[in-house]
Image (cartoon, rainbow, N blue to C red; front, side):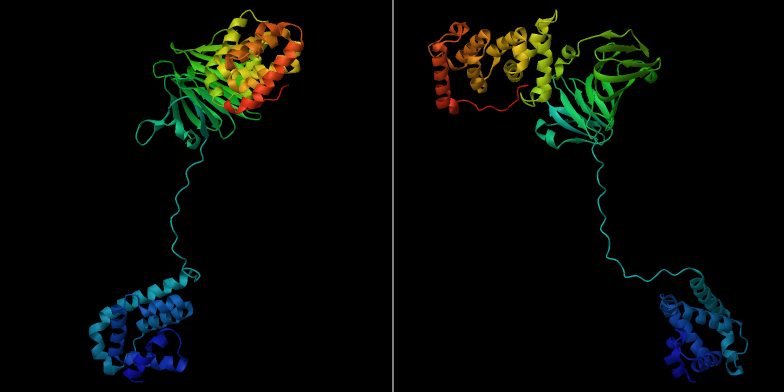
Amino acid sequence: MNCAEFQSQLQAWLAGETDETVSRALETHLNQCADCLALLERENAETQDLPLLKTALAEPQAAARVAERVMERLSTTTIAPAVAARTIAWSTWLTPLLTLVAGFLLALLVLPRPEKKNDPAPSIAQPIPAPAPVAHLVAATGTVEMFDQQQQNWVPISKNKINYFACPTDSRVRTTADVRCELQTGDGCVIRLNDQTEVTLRGSSSIELSQGQVWCRSPRETQLEVRVTNPANNQQKKSDLPTMWCVGPSCVMTGIQPAGEVQVVNAEGEINLRTTAGEQRLNPGQVAEISGGEIKPVRHVDPMLSTRWMQPLMMRRGPDDAELKHRVDALLAQIGQSKIATLYEQEIRSLGEYGVLPLVRFIQSPLGEKDPTRRSAAMEIVADLAPVWLIPDLIDLLENPDASVRRQAAVALHRLTALDMNLGPNAWQEKPNDDQAKALDEWRGWWAAHRDRYPKPQLQITAE
């Protein structure tokens, strides 16, 4: 075999594609021709990817054969005499080169070769999803603030963005003077903040109070944890501050007093309180005051009067809100039975027109028929506060069996319309008669003709 034939068969030989006869001829020529050995070295040096190595990667069996041959060439000493003189000069550096190639090829045989796969399309980095919010801001009477960790300051949350604002884990939220807000957690817990209150949302069922006053409600099968942290202006140890759990359904109101004491009010349900002094369970209406880890003797308060600060939040939902109706009913139930009935009436009146509809529905219900004292008290408030959209209900009350109700309805209608249909309020206190029937027909006819001039009813509450 001459050099031209060797060069034409070299790549096939290295790839293991030549038969045994050709392979032996190539090996014989390589042993006899230093130029072809130099050609092999030069080709591998000039192409860093090394066709020899490419072939080995594609076919491990061929790599094995090549490695075997290279090792044999390294160990052979039977170079032909004709070329011995020419090989002395380069044999000293050719041997290390071939050793390196052989070592690489042998490594390919030992290490596992990954399966050949089609190159996947380059992946586009997907943004890391934001953590799910633990709470949403659902109502506020003003601007609420949230602490921005990056800017390290408090950022106002506009009232116009309440429906879009969510609180991630460990959010710090606070209210300023005369601002109240309501949060709802992912577990269905309701958290209300009085003005100048700050809380940290540790999770859907865990909050920390650092200043102010909160009211919390947990739904069924949920346990809400409320922790009190060290107030900034207080030197109490953290271990002296209480932790409480509302076992659903229950409500708790917690506040930090100016002097640093913590007051806990069980408004409803089961409340478990824990301090360094031990654990204690509070019944509805019970109050515990904690100072220095010690729980002072438990006393009782009226949760209805102590939670009056929440009324603006209830009113934002409208007069048909179920909680607002429940509150008015509970306040009305105390009128005539409590020594401080006047305070309960003041609470109802402070709701303005938002407290009127529940009163009207009470008057129209069987409960009102069975309780003339509270029915009369409710009607007096209605006469003073009823809005224009309750005109049709007031007209219906003109035929109520209770004379005092009929009179107060006439007073309210005159206040709202400046009309009396030729029958003054006092005339409605008499027994039902033809004059009342005629005036009632006139009122209904007038309303049918003029109802478009007045606001339409915004809500409906079914009488019980």
